[in-house]
Length: 422
Image (tube, rainbow, N blue to C red):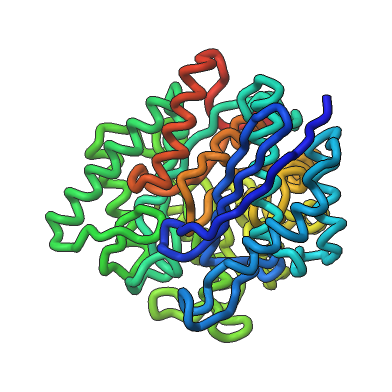
């Protein structure tokens, strides 16, 4: 079957941080409609697909995307409206060729990814399939373990907490619904504990609390307490903890990491993470060292790969070539998967495929600036990665992803839940 796009429109909309982003509306000749809301990150890898902005200081401080909307409706529409597309892969390849740059600088990654996501949704609907069943098979579908970012720091909050994300992961839950319940109950116990200690319970960008804490250990103590108070076992058979230090943001000087008033070199940073892993039920660490710290990644992998998952984000940016390079160099054990980092759904699937072929795991992820589009929920199930992070169990743009996963579980109760078997 081929797919013929008859209309393509875009709109400047807002993301969850109140910044402009791109909404895409796509129609096929049979009347099928596909829509997408493009996410936007705050902590960004240097080699991500370029996110174009207008740069006009009179509108949204320069962050407007009217020029991107015009690009979608003019240059891109002229190329993709009318022809019959045999597959999403063909359409995505045409979008990449039309842009002609390695980082999608000409048209903008935020233009291309919105079209790719909307087209995937429309093509799936035209074929009468849910998106998670329609997307090209990478691995058997699987409901993922949710990683709830319940405490925000770094670029995601205005507090003094250097590490960016502290997550709880119900690894031992028997189903997604029960994992979601655990996350909600732990989140509630954490709110009560913070209030009892006199901390404000305002939220960061991803729905986690943003208390006036500074030491990672203080947060980890609170998380462990909240898990126990909620009635769950602490550890890999119950609820474990995942970290995203976002270490690239911690390097104010080349070669020096700044954490809670201390100054670490790469060796010290790795040893500090090892110390936290010894002391707390941590099962996964994302971006434990900076994106350009190749030696640090090798040290981190050598030191901790047998004990915890080591996820690359800023250094890999959902790029199959960079993932393959990291696998060869033994830099990490998993890749974070963000559709807008690379710019098309097809390239995203290739990144996941590269992870699996090289012995890496994968975790599908949201961005700090999200929309209510639950695309990544279907993506996580489709690629069978068994892991997703979509923020705290709070705020509509985060909950939309979790509610979509609940709906998928209800549609197919026999789908397996949990981490991907190795």
